[in-house]
Length: 587
Image 1 (spheres, rainbow, N blue to C red):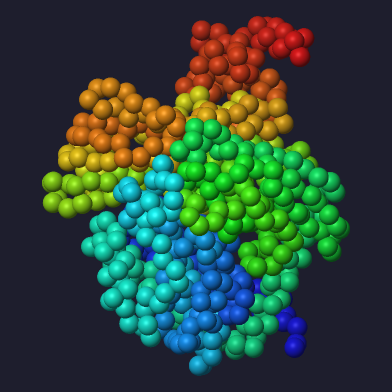
Image 2: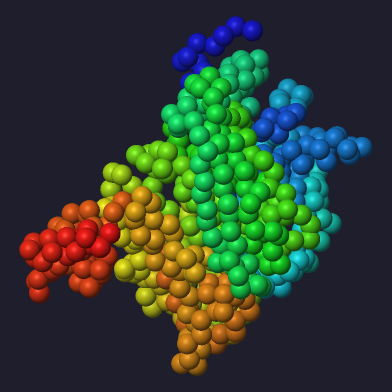
């Protein structure tokens, strides 16, 4: 096999990426549900025909799906091999089983065999978050579930499309088990159409360069990604590093769950590797905060990709990452453990534990913990104004952690992806609600030499009809961790006002089936990022500017940062010096 020249290799690499990007855009623009079309909770990729390994993934998809889609594609390949009828052109498999390489049930995967000139060349796959798949509560985020059946309809790999034709019998089974079934066909067709776009674009790339050249490029790109990742890992000093993060509770038992992360770095530039061990974590839990193995591994993949974003993504990226199966913990869920919180919440705690472990080893590259929750809020009911049922699903941003180069950003997207809050104008147009407030969660940024960014605070009121609200969020008990002496970020807060009375969930930010009536309102304040470095080393001028902007109070300036301000919110240099000398003497 002749070595490819660098220019051709780069063009093919970008060509494969562009195929996935076009699938992402096609899916986004044709999907019916705002969670896909506006919040971007979806992803597309190309996978190896035999191993199911990742070849390329769209830049506009969620990073947490990088690993899980690889595992679910492998499950489809295994099912296809066992079937008496082989996979054919035009077939599309549907699967959402968490225990077969999935996340939670609402993340539905479509997997399609891609044939070129009559031979299977690869698999195309995508994931879309469906706003409902049945289960105990609208939206599927059952905070009190104790078995997966309470979370919704579980689908093993089955052919929803056969030779290009939608199987009406399988479709009817799906639609008969979910709410707002009449609204799902738009998402189903959009998801299948995105794969068809990928089929056309990948065919064009193969026509241009030939299958042999593309195959050679795929092998080379995998090897180079592994080489680049090893080179980055080699920058980490040899040793063993420990990190920890806390999940508030499982939604059923009001006790925190611990993720104990041990990372061992070995090898040099050519054989550097990271070894991850989480066997000291909490045992399987009763509630829905268990994580399936595919999500657990993918969470580590995305954490390392956050640290080394310049390494391209394919199966080679993960080769130097060796993860010990955390058997006997809540991070290795088996049937029938409930798992609705694994992708959006536990995954981010896993990433946070990785960041906490490696920050002392790479302080200039890492950062304090980000908000680390997707803020899952589902509201389902009947809209008498439109005469139809609905399920509204919201995710929300939070603060990023401070880092060596500056303060954390405010209202950033979650650790697991680029998904964002659906524009409130779209939400108010589609559902019988009104946003009465949407602002920064002031004072939520963790104090530090570089402070954390701020979360957001919103209040949404029900305008008409009756509805049921459910929440699966986190960081309500303990805020995102500060780094290198920085303070933790502010916690997540959920308050429901019903008939003028305030209600706070017993599990702080997890609850389900809360009945609300017109005029009732829900207020959510998301976490701020952790602070980075000693807060008393922060430039007093920056502290004064934050106070003038309303981010902190004058008391915060003195207590958190050791900065005394005048009545005009200017720095009192002499008083500030006394505060900081007092702090130094006390420590």
